[in-house]
Image 1: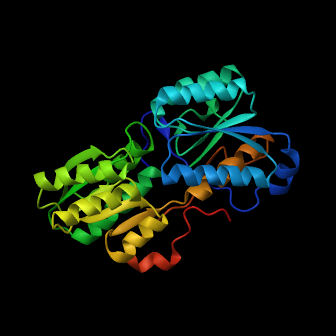
Image 2: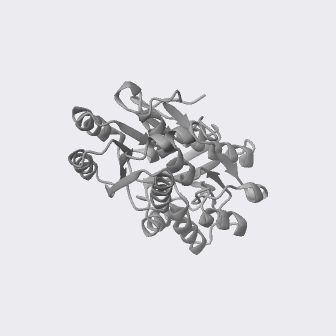
Length: 310
């Protein structure tokens, strides 16, 4: 079902409901968990909010650090967590290629790493992982374009996030699953920055004035892209990812055609839940999934909250 990137496997949360809530909560009161976040986008903010909220609910201390999309900073953050003798480190990596050094550093100190969003193919090196199937997310947006184009030739642009981590896998899921009648005519990173994405989109529409579609790797960047396309007087149909309040508003007012809902809150909650359960050696899946869904204007009423701790 899912195409595997070399050296990387994706995962989603299977452990629904309590999944040992009472046992974990009672046994984990002395745990200190490190959380190394990857950047400061809305996704990362909501992810950290969920990690801290769920840890607090379970009586677990959390020590946080932010790598600001820099792999060297990420390794330094891992080293800092090791020095603080945390019981485990949850990592939202900035670059899948950086994970080997991160994991090796933590393993040498006998501190297990739990990953969000991506996981190494060899899961024997980590405590566990919880993620969104980014290939499937890209596929859902590609499927919307396929259904909208209904076999007609068309063009799409790709505005990626930051190279090296989740964005690469998301974009690959989109481009690998596009129908043959849709051609990718431009692809450039927007670095998860609205202003940068607006500039990228402005350049794309100048070079490709007949552009029909655009895949944008998050909704904040999609706002910038929509502004650029509208300023050029072009009706480019944008598909994007996340399901934030901003994204849903964009669907409602017509700036975006579709988005893929993958609540960061669920990712953060499950990361803490499963880290504790695995530290307690409970019988749960080592690599788990959270559900995702395509949201269009007709689906707005069923869209889950993106940044909410239940």
